Length: 404
Image 1 (cartoon, rainbow, N blue to C red):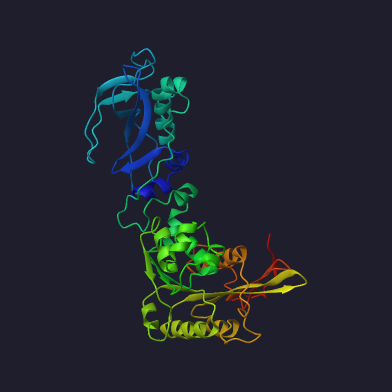
Image 2: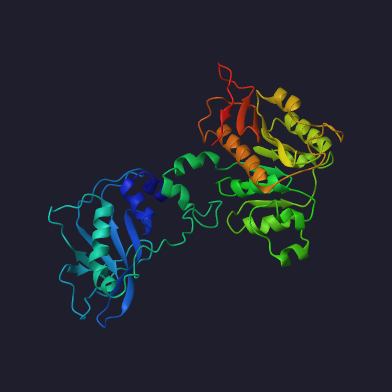
């Protein structure tokens, strides 16, 4: 509830966005790391606490009480004297979460009432911290603290403050509890992982039997060290360790998908297929269609012509109404000139684009993004810089649109 309360109240969002270490505990707000001077002129950091007057679980009104509680010594000026801008009106109190405050402070605004909680808390912070700022301008309460998720069941190791900052946490919740798989951690698959790991899905299963080698480093997000390359670890182990620093649900499987282990995909909510073999692609596609698991297949075809590269990047989705498109649009042959991976030209920027288009299409399927066309096949052409949506569900034919 605390995160939803912040997301749905503009003044609380503003406090977080400006970098204050704001927490919601039951019926009160807490801001930590408020700098102040003690009686010896030493910089200390205290905690501000204010009750929430009308919490409904979704919204709060403006403060009816102008007072706050403070944990720490009573704030002083540079000479060690009590601040004249704030009055101490009573002792502190203990709060249910174990926090003990030491003073109740009073600084009533001229209007008699604070406009909102941002106005109230930032006013107190400014009054308490003014003597410190005069000495050290860098001593601020805007610490932009690393936040641990309040919900122990959160899939993240640290809180998704980006969604909070943008005010889209409620929309991001549409991706929660999904069990997603990425088959193939080459250039495109590794970038898909990079993007999906930043979403609140519950599990991300990684399937690949290859080692992470020198050429992989030039087609993957981040920058592998030479020691990491010399270790010759498996791709799933290498990427699993990196993204487990952020997401708790990484599940590495050091194996290729075959007819013998295809059943491991059963029960998944969505699958990204990023393999470079037509025969393996066909096996996986037919298996996922039979299991009725929605999925996206990605691919690119790049060739050299007149000392330049040209080609296309493809994203094809299979949902309940897109199975035929998946069978006709995806290359499932073995070798030959028609094989889009015959020469296997891949470049990191195209891998990243291919992954981005795939993840965007998945998020449309999950209703995170608005999807007017519901296209089953998306084709980006390099030389014309065009994105063409094919086989749309919309009433009028789709026109190729220029990408910027």
